Image (tube, rainbow, N blue to C red):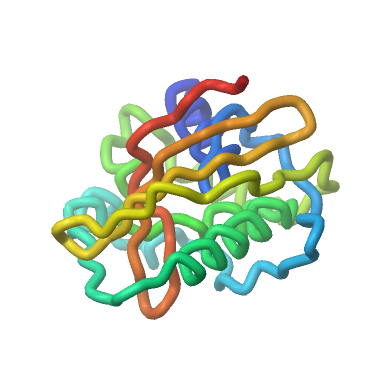
Length: 184
């Protein structure tokens, strides 16, 4: 099983969608109301093509792509659709390789083989649904990444998180989570 700190960190990031607070790793979500499909490539195994996580985590992601509010809002919808897929390979595809690797950089804190086993299980029956309530406060950072505040609702709670997105090969992915606000 994933250790509690990783489970809490990933669970928190996942629920806010793209992020997202409070979903456990075993919790999943059903399709978004607008049936937006997850268009991201799934996470593949072995994770990071067997490159040590610490090496990938130490490589910064720089995004030089211009963006519009609509583009970021659409990217958040795709990230939500991936979270709502019920498949861990798509749920974790919402993160940059650098961010995901940072969770495994210290093998004494997290156990990568168990995480890979979780992904290998494949899709499970969705139990709920994430709905995007608001996308606001979009700002370009000095390195080209984008800070965005996202409000997400599940059947039980509403979450507001600040995410850092990076454009990787033409796709906006979560590269960091700055602030996780607890459920309301």
